Length: 351
Ligand code: NAD
Ligand code: TYD
Image (cartoon, rainbow, N blue to C red; front, top):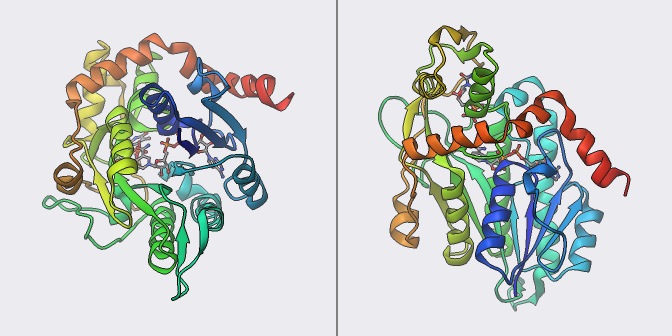
């Protein structure tokens, strides 16, 4: 039996990852530490019961005492850090919380795991850790900056983040690297492309466009809509993290991509046609400041060295995703209306 601490498990990818891991490893205990920001939604975990295999802890990763307490209470083997402020547009409006959570929060986690997993020191002063422990930092391809028409990001591509969000994620990556170099902390960093799938907060491109389309609202396309992202189905991402957690070589970075480069406008038009709406809903709006033109991931390392590969085609993944949003209207309507915050109040704040 292994105990896995997932941070940010009430968000989009974290909640999908908890479901994936509980299904696959029935003997694992999963702890979900999440402070429930606007993006954290316990409805994402509906149906998962607290008990032997699962526990929710409302806490901030930047709160050292709270994180220490969990390590005192539980015998944690693995940490997968999803907790972050994750939206580029918000980072342009208000960068400070991105530094507090994404950079300083990561540093708190690193310090606490180092202290709790350390058994002693070798004769040269390097820490010696308990067997079988590992820290995974879930990062992003955005740390590499932007590409022109050609090329792909490799793990060796120099970091050149352009937004406050990507700068904060790159800073966290550097801290994780430093804790491995200086303290030999067992770790991996994963850098994935844009995720899509169930439970994605409707501020991100795909769920926002689906929700607006269904409500016959305008579809705001930034600039000329020709920016390119590589799209990765969230379930493929979960499988990649599972692979890296169990098979990744400590100290290594792994890129995770879906081999699906698409221009934003193509995606918007696909959603419109699937839902039988009119392209008149498209509204070209002012471009995002510092908008990265193109991302593309070279995932040769994880596919050849660890044997992971994406299983979804974009067509199949989008078909299922659109169906999910059609079948789970209450979920996203509760978010848009603010109802979901009342749900927490009832569930946790009154406890
Ligand atoms: P999300 O915004 O949906 O969820 C983030 C979760 O973290 C929320 O539940 C939130 O409550 C929690 N959180 C935020 N600050 C916290 C804090 N201080 N302490 C504890 N919990 C906190 O994000 P997501 O899309 O699921 O992304 C998860 C991770 O994956 C992030 O680290 C993000 O940078 C990375 N990532 C996401 C994508 C993507 O396409 N969504 C792509 C690449 C990398
Ligand atoms: P987003 O989902 O915010 O992810 P990221 O910025 O991390 O890639 O945006 C994906 C792409 O879609 C990005 O190029 C910005 C663009 N976009 C729009 O054109 N309109 C929108 O309303 C949003 C949210 C994004």
